[in-house]
Structures are given as C-alpha cells and as structure tokens.
Length: 390
Image (cartoon, rainbow, N blue to C red):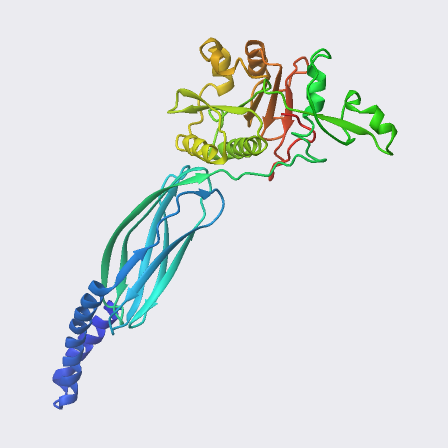
C-alpha cells in the first residue's frame, strides 16, 4: 500500500507543472499532508490502545485446544485498520517455534476480545510468548509495534483414559480371585460382601449355601489385604520418540488415577533429572497431579538402556525401592525378552505384568517366563485387559 501511494504521489508531482489551475496544486498538497496526518494519528492511537492478555492456563491436556484470550481496547475516536497479534509457541518435540497470528479491526471507542487457539501435540512443557502487537493506520501506509513481552511455560498433561471396575473390566472387584489364589486356607481374607457370579471368578469364591437358595451363583468379595502393593514402572528411557513417550505417560497417569480413586496401594518408580530414581506414592488426586507434573517436567528418552535394564543391572542399589511389592507393572512400547527375564530373576516379585503401548508383539514374550504381556494399544486407543487384577 505504501508503494502504491508513493507512485500516486510521484504521478501528481509530474502532472502538477503541466496545469496552471489550483486543482493540481491542492491535490499535490493533500497527497503530501495526508501521510503525515495518518502517521500522527496512528502514533496517538497506538499509545492509547490497551492490550491485556488473560492469564495463561496453569496446565493443559495433550491434544486439546488451549484458549488464550487477549483483550484489545481502543478508547480513541480514531479507528484502526487492524491490530495483528502474533504468538510464538513451541512444545517438547518441536525443533522451531511455530507462529500463530490473528488480526482484528478496531473501531473507535471499542473493545475487542480475541481468542488464540493452539493444540499441543506432546506431553511436556509448552513455551508460549506474545512479544508484540502491531497496529496499522486506515490506509495501511504505516504500522506501529506495541511491546507486550508476555510469556509462559504451560505443562502439558497426559490424556487419561477411564478404567472401570465392572463386568467388562474387572480390576478391583475381582481382587478376591487373586487373593483366593495366593493366600493359604489357614489365613483366609475377610469377607467384605456378596455379589452375583461373573465370568472369570474362581470356583472356591462361590458361597454355596447362599447359591443354593438363589437361581444364580453368589460369590464372596474379600477385603483387599494391606500387604498387597503394586509398583508401576513407566519405562520412558526406552522410548524412541515423543509419540511413544506420550503413550507411556497416558497409560501411567490413567492407572495411577484409578488406583488413587480405588484406594489401591500403588506407587511409581520414575526417573527425574535424568539419573535420579524416585519412588512416589500418591494418596489423593492433588498429590498425583504434582507427581505427574514432576515427571513431565523432565521427560528424557532415547537412552542406551531402558529403565527395566538399568534396574536389572543395579538392582541391589534399588532393592529398597521394590522389594516390598507383590505386583510390578512395566509400561513400555518395546522391550527385549532377555531384559524382562533378567528383571524377573532379580526382582523377586510374585507377579510381573508388562503393558505394551507400542505395536502388537513389540515386546518380546518368553513362553518359559511367568511374566504376562498385555497389548493395550490398538493403534488409536487404549484397551485395558479384561479381568486384569492389580
């Protein structure tokens, strides 16, 4: 637009000497004064325009829109052609900052609300910044930059999937089957209630006297023994990319959320600061949120050794972390069966389960091993194994 105006002004200056009337002089004078007037008005308006950003969210979910609001107020009687606000953002896994621009015209004495939508693709930290806004005069000849200097680091949380303890996905209520299989008859667990028989229940859990009076089998439910503890190992170091790390974190957060709500004694062994192992046992949702935030703030993967392999080679250093757990669950996108066999030998746990969040068959399964591998990722969603017992 500025180039076009210069061409018009040059044409007026060329044709002015060719005419002796005042019209050509007035036209040239207007063309000379007008840009100066526009520049002065733009300067005054830009100094008066108020731009306020709504506080950035404290956290967001991976794959869901983040709405960042910006309020623009023009108190002057002079309209503005447009106001352009540009946001730069980069999430973990992105090599460069991405740019998102939105422009809105400003009428005189008006207030406009602008919403910037961005979608984080990976768990971790999303870095956002709005350095400046740019306003243009009515003709688009000049622009003025308004410094904002707003920035924030937004933690991007995993996408959790729901786990139900019902007929189709019997995790907690089927605990009686596991107890009846592992506890001796001399030390029977306390009965907490009765319910109808479901597929997968063990025969020795059936209450035969009550069942004889009913048309259906009645099964005894047992109290969960406090000595039964679950250890969750999200094997992030073995992940090759952020997509695999996302799936590990999604499954890890989902299972931990369920154990907290179901009051199951569960802890997680994670890696912080790249090398330090931490055992965390959340007692409520707030503690779990802090625990997940701590994990995603230091996502580290692509190591030579997986977390499972490192624990296997240095188990004596970490035995105090894991020796009191009866069930260990490893979440991994791929792992060699040799590593799992080695971990099985040194851990001494009663049960070891592996949740494969990679492609089906990506985890090496040894038929001679007691470790059970569950393929819980079908390429798009998580499918929790039916009748799995924590």
